[in-house]
Image (spheres, rainbow, N blue to C red):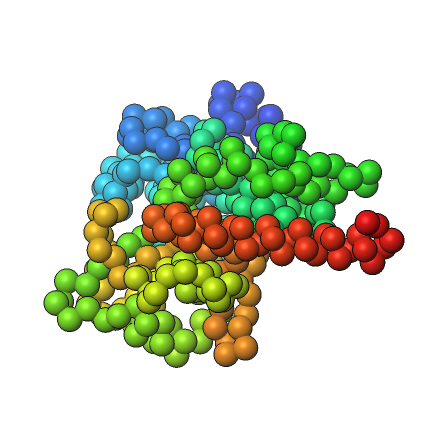
Length: 369
């Protein structure tokens, strides 16, 4: 649910009084919460200037609280705590009690007051999206929309509205509309304004494949114990977890859709982890195999690879045995990432063939040729 991102008359009056206005204000629950976002900043000079501006605001507005949020920053948790201690020495206690310095990381928000609930965190994600520089979160949303549109096209589904895209991806309406506009001639608009891909978006797809590791925050795990479990063993353990937020992708996911994929065995296990919020819980890795360790080396012999699915709706498919299967687009990206190019080509051709057959059947059923 979207909320106003500014504080109306109060924000303007404060700006006149102190010459400063934060990025947004949350006004549900009685006590206003002002938010300043410093996306991608690594300099404490900028952090301290913003802290001082928020402190002036709180001194003039004793009924409100304030957050300085640092998403996508290299500042460590230890350095964050040290900066808070310095601020406590410089600012009045009644101001510091209402001022929080928050660090945004993949696993959540460090320093976020615990009484601010899920609705606030969802709203904060939207504020960060708006305030992030081009190329950060907006790019992730853009390619999430490319994935969803391709998912609809491969499976021959109906055209979609911008509102449906917004709710499926979990972005704002303007972000979804901009993504469709950027896709240009690859998009066909029906008379009712619903959108569908004209064909396979080759240029967009090539860019998505090249950025896949970054966009999906791919994590690779190796076994350094010398007694490596097979991917099949990990798959059996995954089935025992009964998780509906983890889906099988890669070559095994591709076989779910097309059993005739030409590859003997399972070289590694690819999983898609649905985490639409910022928090990532890696606890399931130890349950699969305590010997697994994460590696940053892309060419390491990984036995397990996990890709994050950030959109609001996972698009996972439930199997008869309770196993969750990643959607075809995720599986196709996994094949490219694993450098199984011939299998990726065959997997794409499998869906395109069935799409063409379904279209012919529809035309014949409606009196077409």
